[in-house]
Image (cartoon, rainbow, N blue to C red; front, side, top):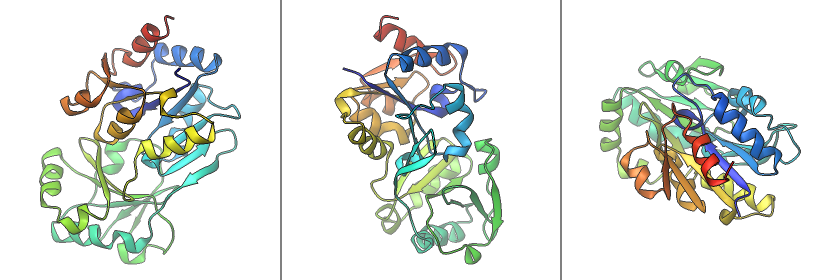
Length: 267
């Protein structure tokens, strides 16, 4: 029995205007009121998705959000942390050197803000993300020695395609590397994924993947789509993502989430 619905945001739950449609909102609220957990699964921190949490009224004692692509599981009502997996500053040395050598941009995120590395090529992450996150310009050498969530490389699609081809094994073996959007490549702790965070949350709520339905469209959604009892790809997803999903729904501008849920739950 499905008792949890996990939802990617960009190009899945959110339409092209970065909004949750009325149809998606109303459908998810009805299911949530019936006792089904609704969990937003995103690469962003909780403060950057809080308006969506509030819009869906996901503020009960058992409401959680998966942030940083699984790196942090946050309890919504008090924003306490159920689980967190981090990287140290030294863990970014390899990818920083690669970005420097290949004249590529890099942003590094802790669990609250983004550090724009000013000793490298200027990043487009702030414009592409279009989210109310705090961006702090800083040289890599001046980054404080503390816990971080991930690094981001934001560039044109062809540039990122080439960068991924050029990555040496030393780097690909050191990070979980995913494209969360065509113009965003993320460097996460090894073996990190939305499925990792969801497994922790499911166990905490005394559920398992047999109770999970997941919606997504991008490479960073593939683990949760595979793990879920029902993994649903959006019609705007790549052929590779559609191939691993159990089903495909309409695209993110056609209320694909709501349409699928209405059909599945006979609403």
